[in-house]
Length: 139
Image (cartoon, rainbow, N blue to C red):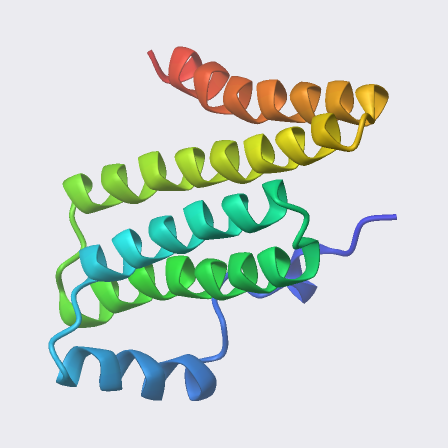
């Protein structure tokens, strides 16, 4: 059973995220820097996962996800939110999904897990289809 959407916050509580975002802005970090760092982290996570370091790869992926979350918050807080930034973030998000799933696919193939590899491939294809269907629906 799904939780009512009112129980799930759209954004992290300001009391937690606010000081982090203000600190990043104070030292000159830009939203694009966070986007690139998140992408680089996810590429690293994919490499770790592909080579069998699943736990470490998962931790790196979680840290990268936090950076990806912070880029939007930083953009809104500093008034640097833009369509170009949102597009960059969206492209990096899809690429990050694909590269991490590709790393998992390589791991499954290396382990000889053909069925699991096929499942990961199906998830990868499905994740790419979501963006395609959304783009087609918009026009």
